[in-house]
Image (cartoon, rainbow, N blue to C red):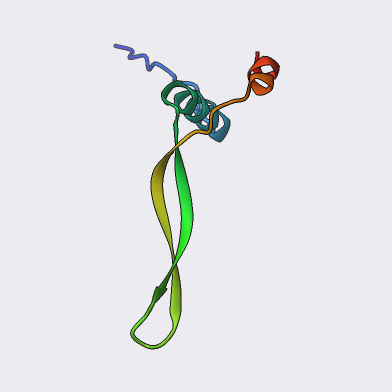
Length: 68
């Protein structure tokens, strides 16, 4: 008895970027990453990335017209 497999198209980074951009535009929010310096107990510093959710800036009328 033969079995068949459904072959899914391979997802790419471009697919992810497009879906993320669509989600950002739909919700009005985006993920914002900022470096934060942390003092260590040995007198040195480390960089850590801090992730937050930020509101997208409002588009001007000119930007809205060029987008469509």
